[in-house]
Length: 179
Length: 200
Image (tube, rainbow over all chains, first blue to last red; front, side, top):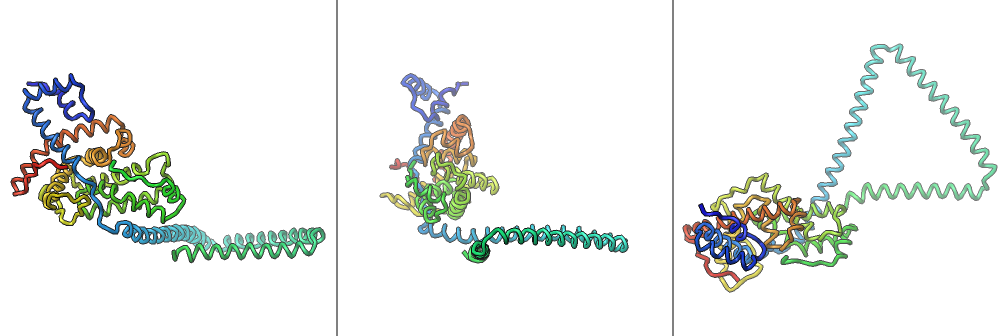
């Protein structure tokens, strides 16, 4: 059987052959009909590939892209909203299950649950009283140190920051979704 | 490549969130991207969807784009991967010649002196040749013959080593060499025009 290598490799190579290689290939092609068929087939196929033009889409592709972009962005935002809602619901469900389990335990032992609730209420009341005491001491100390003008400026600044925060949140929450 | 060059500022502005700049990129690259999708998928409608999907994916991934890399190659890489995945999903590799779409709705961007029927017949034969290839081999051939990408660029775009690109091109060429006589015989058998005149 006639060997087809390296002639097949040379026939399909993208690079130019050396004069020696070209002469050997030519000699081989005169004798080998299989390689001759390969050479003819590839030459024709390559000619057709090189002659084939770039195909263009129908007119208005960029406009269709802009329309597609708008639709997909709305869909993406909707999906994100559903994701947040789903996660929130999952969290709420987990919390409900936990609380339900606690409630069920309390129903099984009401006296124990009542004592526990009382303890929590006492602890919360004590904590609030302590915080009030600390807050009053701080306010009295600061009132003596800070001049009235600075107090007014601080209050106005805090109000401005709160307003800014509210405006920003409303823009993100309402106007952002509309866009 | 039958290439497109765009101002680098467009890419930078698009990366900074400028939609108008990205639309300019879409306008500039619509033909190369669509052509790749069309050569890969063979169908104008699917190619349009694939090209739109390519730009959407590019738009979403702009932050991850490396400006050191040619933007066109990056886009073609996205398009090629999308088409390869699509073909693998749809199993269109073994599409029969009879199932090939008609090209009467395809625009002819370079009208020549020959009749549109001859041009369509040529397109049909090229499409048939490409459809016989494995999707990855087809992408390599398309990138080589329509975009003149280097082996390195093709390897980067197709996630292949340079030696794998060469190997795939060799295999694809061998297969195309065998397909051509069949395509010619098929065209004649169906009464198609025998396109023996050399294309310009």
